[in-house]
Amino acid sequence: ELEVAIKVVVVGNGAVGKSSLIQRYCRGEFTSEYKKTIGVDFLERELHVREEECRLMVWDTAGQEEFDAITKAYYRGAHVCIIVFSTVDRESFLAIERWKKKVDAEVGGVVTCVVQNKIDLIDEACMTPEEVGRVVKELKLKLFRTSVKENFNVEAVFDYLATRYLEK
Ligand code: GDP
Ligand code: MG
Image 1 (cartoon, rainbow, N blue to C red):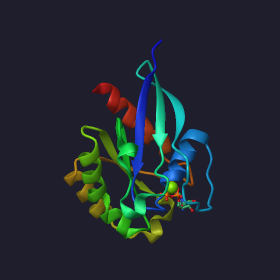
Image 2: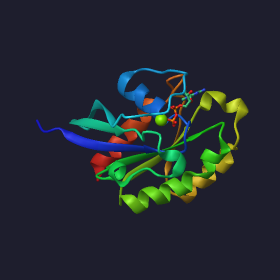
Image 3: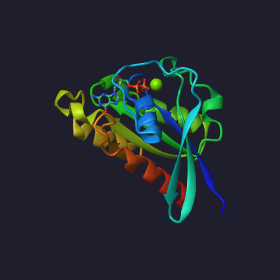
Image 4: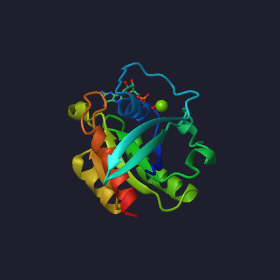
């Protein structure tokens, strides 16, 4: 049986939880220590969707995101994209549209969604649910609220993206 290979790119400001999301999904691990991502290209996980075996290759950014300097090689051949922001980082929320434009400029037609991570810290939120709703509606992107820390709603993000990709 042929396996579908899906390249997933994960973008967003630094420290929003991108590497944590990838580690959680692909390895079932979480660490509260903040380590700048270095050297890793991607992690993999098998997923069964609509009677198809998918191999998700989930790419990490190697910590280049602060300078908006994620290289073309990172985006090349991407099929789906996750834009992550943090519930406790307003700058990361305000950057969603910039990331969307960047992705669109580098690679056309990728299935994209937005992840509001660190939802466990909702009591300290730096944006209202209405503001978030407005932005994702404007950009026509589906929103997932996750806590990578609490392992809440992480699987749903990847299930959605793989399903949408296979529908195309
Ligand atoms: P990246 O720079 O976007 O790759 O962010 P990291 O994955 O390195 O995470 C930055 C910090 O946020 C780390 O200390 C993580 O442990 C923490 N973190 C990640 N996800 C969550 C979450 O859902 N809730 C909380 N409270 N902390 C998180
Ligand atoms: Mg990282």
